[in-house]
Image 1 (cartoon, helix red, strand yellow):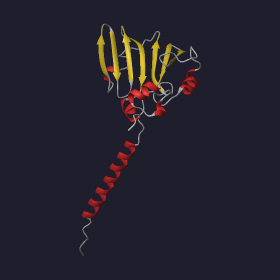
Image 2 (image 1 turned 60 degrees about the vertical axis):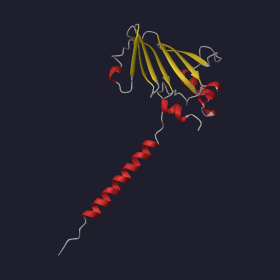
Image 3 (image 1 turned 45 degrees about the vertical axis):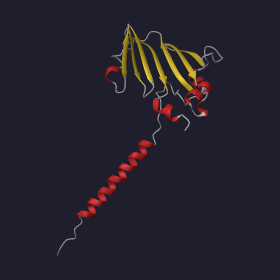
Image 4 (image 1 turned 30 degrees about the vertical axis):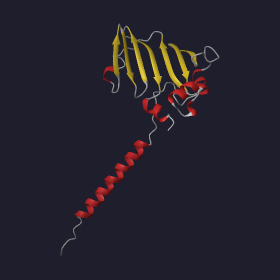
Length: 172
């Protein structure tokens, strides 16, 4: 008795299965939220002043400065948090609901012992390096993080919106 040829059926089923797997993978990847580098749960273009104060306590000064920023004393240094203002929203053509969110977090390290080597920045994907007169800067625009080293020691860490996140916040 002759067996029916099922090889064509198996190839079609396998092809359909692979197509479904590829489609699900694309949907999952497309549905991921683009996030900037965050610090202590504070995230650029997401967190607001209340979130910052809940995490860091009361600022050194109570009113926003002329630069639309607040300073906070933290263990190891000072943190300056700058907020998105109406002018920035207009200039960058952002959605209006972005106004009032965190634009930038800058940590000024008083006595950090971190070096580019201890943070393994030379081998980290996505980081570029610039050096001039004893100042070394490693930055990753895609993720929105910048490290500045003076005389080999970490002096500032900056967290900003990721490039993709800023593009998505723009009005269509």
